[in-house]
Amino acid sequence: MTGPATIDEICVVAVAEAFRGDGEILCNPIGTVPIIGGRLARATFEPDMAMTDAVSVLAANILPVGDPDAPRVVEAWMPYRDMFDIVWSGRRHVVMGASQIDATGNQNLAAIGGWRMPKAQLLGLRGAPGNLVNHVTTYWVPNHSTRSFVPRVDVVSGPGYERVADLSEAVRNNHEIRRVVSNLGVFDFSNAERRMQVRSTHPGVTIGQVVEATGFELVVPDDVPESRLPTDEELHLIREVIDPTGLRRAEFPS
Amino acid sequence: MTEDDVVARLESGMTIGIGGWGSRRKPMSLVRAIVRSDLADLTIVSYGGPDIGLLCATGKARKVVYGFVSLDSIPLEPHFRIARQTGAVDFMELDEGAFYLGLLAAAHRVPFYPTRAGMGSDMMAMNPELRTVTSPYDDAEEFVAIPAFRIDVSLIHMNRADAAGNGQFLGPDLYFDDLFAKAADATFMSCERVVPTENLLDEGTFHTLKIPRLFVDGVVEAPRGAHFTECPPDYGRDEAFQREYAATARDAEAWDAFRARYLEAPDHEAYLAAVDGRGGAGTPS
Image 1 (cartoon, rainbow over the protein chains, first blue to last red):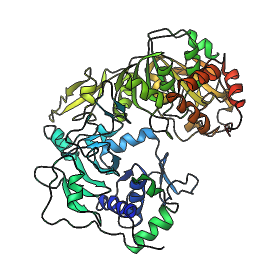
Image 2 (cartoon, chains in turn orange, blue):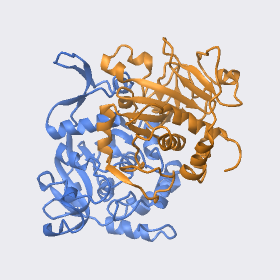
Image 3 (tube, rainbow over the protein chains, first blue to last red):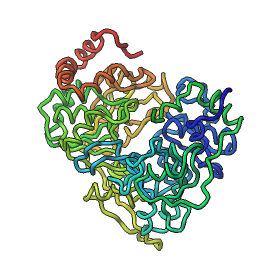
Image 4 (cartoon, rainbow over the protein chains, first blue to last red):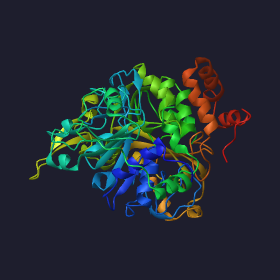
């Protein structure tokens, strides 16, 4: 292991931190950096979390990313259909991407330019509508800019706080956007107005840079800490065990 | 039966359910038989992959009903992308779990199943036909009522089957093929190999026999019938072929060549010969 932590490793740790305190739930990150973050959290401070092999089983061991042949210790069969039993049970914390996200946490994965005849068809609603009203969600946005952090998303795939405010008590109780992790910082909704707030900025990133790259008014507390650095143990796990081939770096704008 | 015998049982305007998931265990030889036919104005219900892409690109689909349309290793189906961006097809896009409930309601012959999925999202605005329902119990909570899909015919592909219509999956996931069979008025099943009933337990336990003949109206033996999608343990996805297919969405000339070479092959055997004859890229292992 050589060299100080790089931005991709700081983001991995920021994702891992989103799972702190989750206990025995399904940790279900989608995307390379989120998966590494989830596996890191389970390998260190959240050992009770369950995780899939990204195919069809829950694997009890810590798997390296991008290696379909890595030996796995199977603890349960998890065909795709059974995932909905877990989603609807609430015992899940998903990390999804967001092509667009707004100040109240509305997420768009579906389409740019409206849904009727989109200028750009994206992945679609996917599971976002059901995820948000059933269990905890974190978002990972590797390209923080005014194109991704927008005043108003074109399509609401995953509803934010404003959208669920008038819904049932059950929905409101299930709904939590734990964190938004970007390549510039970490954000949450921990104020009374439930508007996106800066939680930390990554080392070397100023608040001014974050504000400039955001297309809406962020809540900025008086004291914004730096995102924490990986520990030596975490760097070892990221570099040698979970992502030995460096796939995590591919998600970052060059 | 042959693929063309199945197509003879279909009519223009029908709603067709297609099993598999993304670019996994899709009944592709049956899909290509539809492409070769005179059928038109179809509504396709699917956890979509190249089935939806091909039926959009060839103008067979008037409407598509889906939870997603993906090629897995290529996250968004490129021909579907074009169909959506040009407004070429009507669509009903549902949350992935809500889609499951539409199948389940159809299989159970109830008009809807309630869910929270969709509350607060634009799924409701995208699909103005969706309604909500209030719990008749003390909680009085409002739910989305996902309507039962009305499916005329479902098409699924299994690893093994017997001639009577009992189907077997040997891979890691059945997906929703049992529900597609149960939700439709009629179901036709292609398979890698037809085996005698007494041999159905040779390669898997009885847990793999999830498609009973009660829900199947005809069987087509189609070795490599899911190509280029995966059909484990018989073969993996033909990624090289899939890349070639995906590239045709950006290139009209390549699409014409693909169509002439593979989609206009008169039957499944001729298609496989064209696939194997293309040189270079690997045949499925």
